[in-house]
Image (cartoon, rainbow over all chains, first blue to last red; front, side):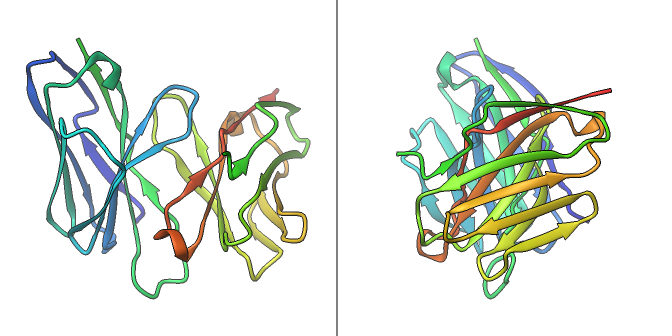
Length: 115
Length: 113
């Protein structure tokens, strides 16, 4: 099973709203990622959690706040977003440690529109 | 500075023929390479990968070839099917950068019936 699930599938929010994106995987992966993707561009890394600890923050604005409640769940809390933050938000997971494979498995994404 | 380059933005192939997607890289520290397929408004789907200790990896209709001296890899799809029409991304990683994926800009493949 290589499934990563994300909810919601679509989200429309105003610039003063607070919302959260959710991601779940049950592959036993210990690294989880948030990416942002604009049309016709590759995914852009935002955050990496390794063993439930934030290991990489790619200088993401503080209006995006990640959270990893446990090894299977990853949240992205959104507050006071701008219209230019509208994009497809992708969650991914991968094995860690002494694994010889480094594939990241992606969820279907949340299409976010900020009005 | 684009460390992973996919120089063909698009490719059109007839159904049943071979599709060859190319990728070049500049960082000799990369030791793992991956190909992903992406349909519009969906997450990327992992296709196939190759370690730098190998020069070929095959999985069904998909084969990836790695030429380390040329810093070049290619993805072969044989035979191509209309359902293969998608954007294909090449990505690379190495232990020194926390296994972050460095992505190419993608090649849009159209397989015509």
